[in-house]
Length: 83
Image 1 (tube, rainbow, N blue to C red):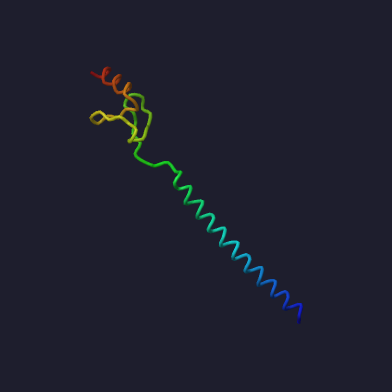
Image 2 (cartoon, helix red, strand yellow):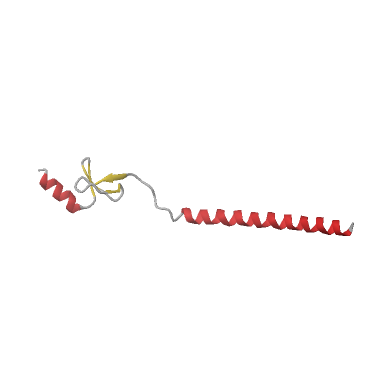
């Protein structure tokens, strides 16, 4: 009878330990995912440069009327060539 109680007691302690371990792992993974979400690049619209066709984020592009350019020199060259 004493051996059975010991086995049951050990089993209960083992199950409790597993629950605590899983709970801590979930908390750590949640904390890691929260901190990593701040490191992600902001997603935005990508636009092609009308001179070289390279796609760049809209916030970094230079707009002229309805055209987009990756830098001022491409804008100037494009406007010179198409004038």
